[in-house]
Image (cartoon, rainbow, N blue to C red):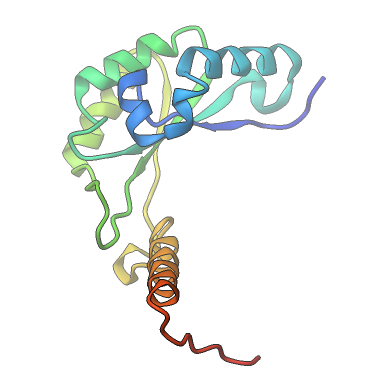
Length: 160
């Protein structure tokens, strides 16, 4: 038996949306992904025989009640709890954060199907230090450095 709890990043109730926001889905679609989860659950005794589903809430992308119904149908045979994670926007991000009312409606639909649903609290977003926001800044600096290199400009390197 495997005694390791598993959390998976699903983020979408169907392949059309997941292809857009999780590009690896084009190689390993939801059906393949959930088949692997079922194999894990057959061999695991961790987390009371359940897996944790991580689902980032993207405003008007994957957060409608129709998406909640699709997600419930998709996961009906998967023992799980679902973490709903409000998106942490950063400058230039292609998505926005779902409103609290949209997240609440989504959560209530899932609970009506009997799922344990937890809405994660965001921390650090007031200073752009929440999950995903720091990486956005690092990626931006990396692109700036690459652009300077391609234009033949000198790049300052600080000795440590």
